[in-house]
Image (cartoon, rainbow, N blue to C red; front, side, top):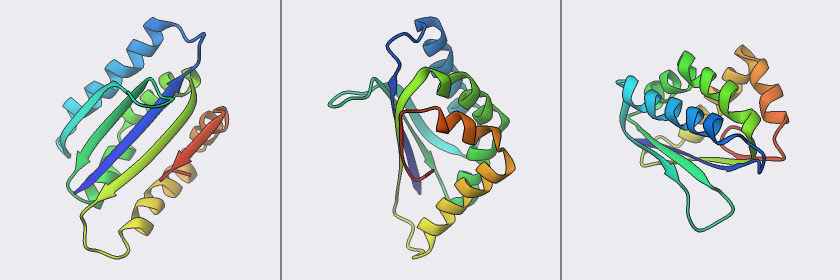
Length: 132
């Protein structure tokens, strides 16, 4: 299982209706995709971030399906311009010693296949984690 988590800090001037729209799209993605075993999207406590999400994915193929779904790109387009800082991370119990490289490859492939995403990420003040 791969547990993909993001934590986001929203720009102070981000319109609340647009923030809620992006969060609703994140929930829709969790509901829509059969590869998502379970998920949560909500408020983040205990740090500099206001919101976060966690998606549980069975394996690297499910992870790739999740990352490449067109709704995920819609979320990026709607949400990333509202974000100042973001951290993404992955926790896994997969015994494959190469799983970290496989996760990184999904991200690098996605940036290569969808170069517009790089511009969105470069617009953030800070971005750390498995997608960097």
